[in-house]
Image 1 (cartoon, one colour):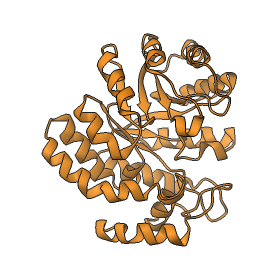
Image 2 (image 1 turned 180 degrees about the vertical axis):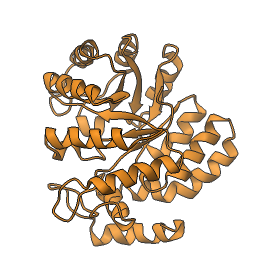
Image 3 (image 1 turned 45 degrees about the horizontal axis):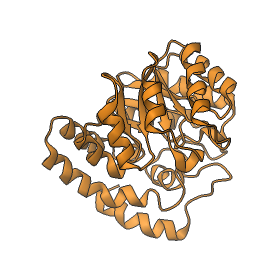
Image 4 (image 1 turned 135 degrees about the horizontal axis):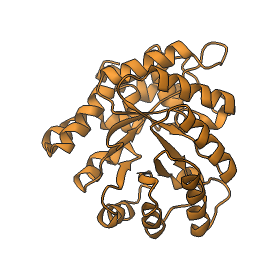
Length: 289
């Protein structure tokens, strides 16, 4: 349903710090022209945590309207279940093809709490849901057992796995029910996970390199792993450099250089430092960005 290459879109801002609609529409076109299958507005990379509900829904609406081919998987999570339900309903009303829902952050719920949180969202909407597991941001992990329980709910169709725990992800791949998609949430391990049976990626890097990431994923899907590996190796320095400071600081800098927005995130995130630029600039030059 959401297999292949998905881009965790940045939200471009203009010089006054407002959502730059023209740049966002241009970014959607750039993604689709270069083979991206799924567009993900308002995730962590899209700075959903620093946007008002009005802005959040505006960004989803713009991406939905601008998209001509790619599916739209709208970020609509929260650490408050009722808020997550509200955002998910509104994203569904705006025409999103699916919802990306981050596990409740900061509050550190039990595994039963995580299950009940997603069950409440699943029962409230008809839109398919991709669970987003990223313990480094949320402070809690969704275990294999809980993920497999969630996979039995008819509206939950997959997971974006960004735990970095290869054993955990392998077990989900091996034990998941038929049709439940496992998507890499970490560019640097996408190829490894796809060799184990994962279905694709929700990528930060594909903001700036959509064609290369798409080609890597497409070749992996076709079992052309030597070709996919050569692309992976070409992008490997960038995979690491885009996390030299907190995401999305580095990718906002890159996209600003490419003409998509002002290049800066919103506070409390700050523009990329000089040391960060010293890491990224040579890599960007090598890739012709």
